[in-house]
Length: 237
Image (cartoon, rainbow, N blue to C red; front, side):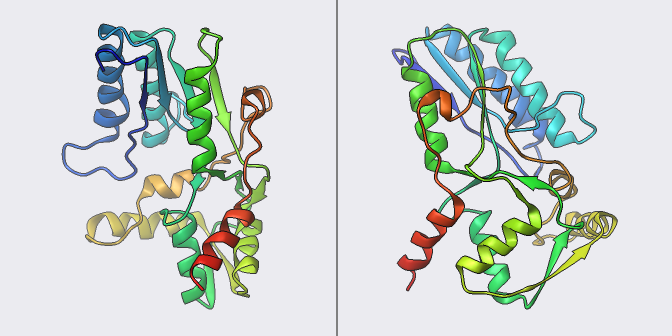
């Protein structure tokens, strides 16, 4: 980072493996990046966290994201904190996975009753926002929360994706207690892509706060998930 004007830490971890833990990645590594940025004389440091990050959360993942924000600010007081909602884009692990499962499963199991609120943000909109944060004149540190143009319930989001793809799946609510049991088994059996932390995330709303700075303050009109999905589907035809 020596000689760099700005630095961005966008490293995240969704599943712990061996020495790669939520604490080592979201707290220790984030703190180290902040230390090195300060020592290198970096002017602007942007730390990418996530909406809902809370150092007091009972969820280990969410708690470590909150602790990571604190650790970064402790070492680099003027760091900018960026909290995106769940991000989407072509070939991602969110939208692409949901679309694949909707196509394969005539009956789609929902997390709970599908009432968790989501405000998906396009990954390129978030990237553009980070660039504008680094370029903006105001030096004072700020927390930004980035959510897309539409707030959905989880069920509404699934139906919107299915409609764009011309699908009519039957959505079945599955209690979170069942998902937790499946996630527990998944963590024991290798190869199953589900963890208890992922289940916990689906219980918590992921929407931007109106009290926080966001896309509007940076002059960005975020893309809708329908708009990006249309492009993805047309490219595959």
